[in-house]
Image (cartoon, rainbow, N blue to C red; front, side):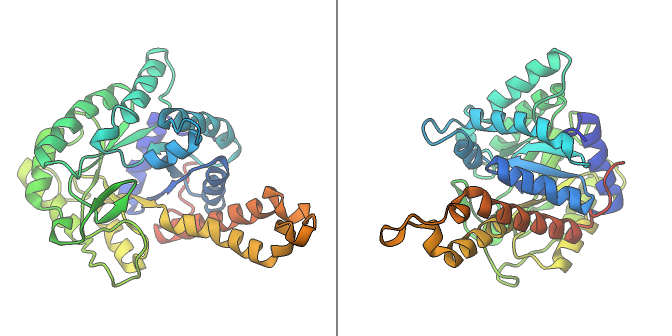
Length: 343
């Protein structure tokens, strides 16, 4: 199947919300990690989301110029071709983009999709994220309003992060403290500014104790039940049904979460969960194992020539792809998206 059209992406999200499951959103930084994500989705018979952060896009742009837009466009165009070979629907998304990178990343990518839509084509990306968590909520929502107007016109879904997620992600960092919990007032102000669908569809990354990066279960206090409070508070304020709730939530900083925490989040409206740290490790672990096991072969030790069969990037690259794909399959199982692909 091809990259999801705007209509298919909306259907994917609607199905997830109604069915109380979520799509893994896998960060990719190369054609190989892209194939690992696509393979994992296909093996799990799950549709999914592939995303590129600002750092990932810079890496994809090459170390000579480090151009984020070039990197993101190149991989997106590549994905539009290779995804045809995988029997699932996949949406392309750009991950965390703070204020100082909007003009060098999201806005130029939006302009590309706007031009494509004017020409009768589909947008290049299906959704973009605006990370205004380092700004005041007023400034955050003002920028979100401007972006939402543009994304709606370009048939793109906007993702907004209204309050901080702890830890560090591509240079944006927040302390782990009580500010990591979105309030009902925060959610109401968001709905007042962005509407509840009539101004354009958006995904909401609300904070319930989430932390980016590596941590063990129990080291971070997650309160996924808070999402129910946010939905109910906004539903009461605007006269909307409390179930399934007005918001489509995103789960950030999910590495190390327990299955129970994940399932509670799904019950309360999460339709997308970002996964990066765990898939990075899954990709790298077999590479390290290969290098240690084949030390004399991957290096020209003591004047020897090494062993081309083991230093050929394909020899360890295949292992890395398989391992990362297996972690994506596991993520689909945790998020209950296995077997839910749109036929």
